[in-house]
Length: 511
Image (spheres, rainbow, N blue to C red):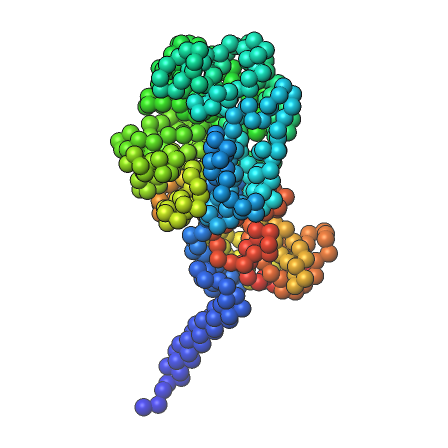
């Protein structure tokens, strides 16, 4: 039966839709052919709009104020960087961003005014040369050596206590501790911190410095008896608070432009709770928290101060240190699931590598990879939509959907930026959305981070510089207000080598 004219129009319309659909599919396939790198990237190109949807690639990110910290020196100089070649800065330990150097003062100033900075600067430069950071703790009390505070300090008249670890106090003791509020000791310590401050304060290569000059191993143990060093048995709560404040104030004086942190144990190693005078004072001075006691004991004593951390993490990065890896295993305290849980409970930005790193990586690499997907912040642009073509000097809109898939805020903040580049990699236009700071992205439970939808309005080539019509590559980045990229993103898209991620192509039309 012959078709009517009306049915023919319907048929033609249906065919037109089918052809359009096929055209869109072919266009999408063409994009995929043009960008075969884009695994985990779905692109749709219509007549007017390009839509890109990204999947998190699950990779570790090296970003400011987060990552794994490698104990190159863990008090004892041979722990744990002694087996690393000079060229080895742990690129293979995914997510390692920082080398951590924790040493007694005596190794750094063996004679008054004579400094041995090479002991820290040498390993530090190995990491810095690879674009990574360094962190420090300078201790004045160690149970495994005689003089953690240099002997010349006591020769100058500083008061001290001699003791044998785990045994007794007396003149035959094998270790010497200062009285942590002695005036001579504090004068000499201040001179040392002033010298360290001249080198490291405000240094962009320094991630953080511990307030570690008070208490055993720099952890501030101040209420324990002779089994932790006899000098502590005389520390009343009032004296402890005064000493903690003094050591915080000294560090703030000489490192005013550097992130500082202090051990939770200054408030007592096994006292759970939210508020303590010592850590409250630290917080009031902008000093963050570190917990050196993760998995030291088996559950349920796997840690004590996740409640304390709730005051700190919304504004300051929290640092976690698990027990020496093999020591934790030997006493039955190690638990990979609990290690991951500690990151969640503390909203941690840093986690330690506290053993010979090769061995820890071999045994716990899957745990480390899972932690990397949550540790610190994880900025994820899930979806971007932009016009396929825009006229020069006319406004246009770009939409994106953002998440922070980590456990902590992006403390330094930043702004989404679009950058147009030509075939010679020249920058044609830089467009920064200053209406939203990624610091404001909320954090959430795993797989449940809140999403933020944004629309930004831009204009290209208004007044200057000279902008010519043509097709250009379009990149996305997150960084400073001037468009400088800062942050790695978990995207399987090629970059320009400067943390700009390729979205696709955009065409500029003449006015």
